[in-house]
Length: 83
Image (cartoon, rainbow, N blue to C red):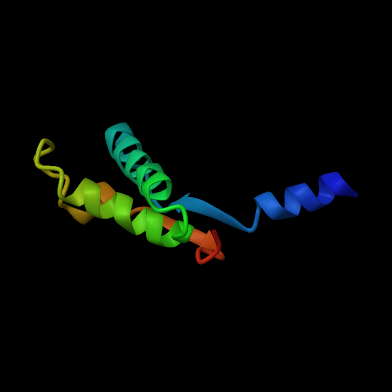
């Protein structure tokens, strides 16, 4: 029974990718998301993903990082408000 509860807890939310993205984009968004969660432990996962996306959009070291095709595929599915 404990294992079922753990599986349910782990599957209440996921980060979905709606189309194929470049590996660098996935790394950038994921890194920014986890950095936001570490810096602000009280924020929800959807807000952390938003912060990671904004960091990726504002990264001037990649010429096309501001284009939605680079960062727009990522979304939280589930209860993104939870911490």
